[in-house]
Image 1: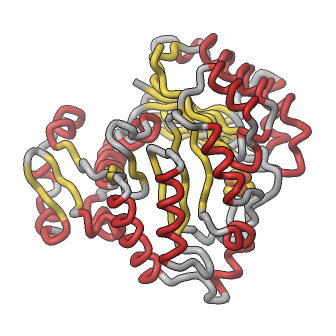
Image 2: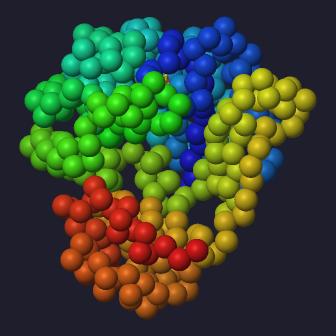
Length: 370
Ligand code: SF4
């Protein structure tokens, strides 16, 4: 199975921490942009004839900021050009400040069956500090409209002035609002964003404080009935994101739109981040790829191990043997011995112990070879 990703690069305003491809001042170009995405899909149709796609993920940016008819046409275009499984998981990201009953109704009618809502925090002051356009009240209205639907809420930790009480309240509110999946991410101060100045000024929690917030959040999520299945992702039983699971299992995926990346047949390629360049390429019937590289077998093995070690299930050693024809225990004997304290190596799987999952990078690095 494989996944489809579509990037919608429009937002109402730029959040202070954002370094994604999103263009608040170009929202007037949404109609032309979506026409290019439909065309890009048509251009890829021949190459992807043999693929059955199990997921479609509409991300951004803020896909919910544009006219809902463009989203309905996007789902229809995906179905027209590709084989999308009848029970495919179709997700749209939504900013609570851009949602209405009629939009959600149109999404559901077009086949969207999963919603990812950016709550971030239930504290209005922290939301304003982040430059988010929504308030807690907007989130609660959005959750009410999604009652009975399969939806996920995003929560951030590591924010300036954020307390454990804030985190606890955000998780409780997300859980009580009906979310069946919660993603909990630490703020990353990216160079070039306004939040980076906060970081340089020492105004953000340090790594020990963020680790404490994360451990606290994990416990709170557990109390609320959410099991961790990946370092940043938690859900009720059976509500894992199929789209993200495909990434973590090194499945294939195709991306459309500005900045979207793809991995097909062990070739990774990425579209331009420049909106004008994207338009020019697609209008002249050229792909907008700026970077393409074949993933060598050692790199494939590194990716397989690195991605699996981020998940609670860990590495399936039999699958490793099947894919690469090598014994996992033999290949990684030294790394396993060095990290014995941090890992569990039993029942055909190698996994990082729960309490060390947040610092997985320092462990995973010993398993990388390419
Ligand atoms: S809503 Fe998301 S993509 Fe848009 S500016 Fe904020 S963080 Fe960036």
